Every structure is written in structure tokens, then in C-alpha cells.
Image (cartoon, rainbow, N blue to C red; front, side):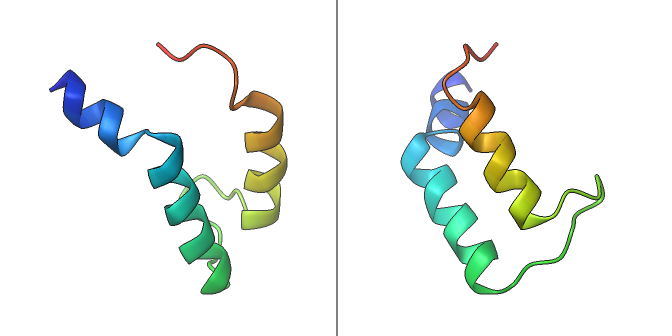
Length: 51
């Protein structure tokens, strides 16, 4: 299971997903965060340890 999560949360997979949502002009999700807000969030928090 850990390998699956590592693959899902890999930087390359997350960047690809982000780019697809941005290209589709994706709307805010259930959390209400827009793609522009997500861009700011990822820049701020991506390098922090994940647990």
C-alpha cells in the first residue's frame, strides 16, 4: 500500500494532475480551493515533510 501512495503522491504525478486541472479551467473542489489558491498552497507547503 505504501508503494501505491508513493506513486500517487509523487511529484511528477501531482504536477501532471495539477496541469490537467489547470488546462481544463477546473472549478473549486469540495474544499472550495480554486486552482489559483492551490498553486499558492503547493508553492508554500510542497517541500514540508509528509506523514
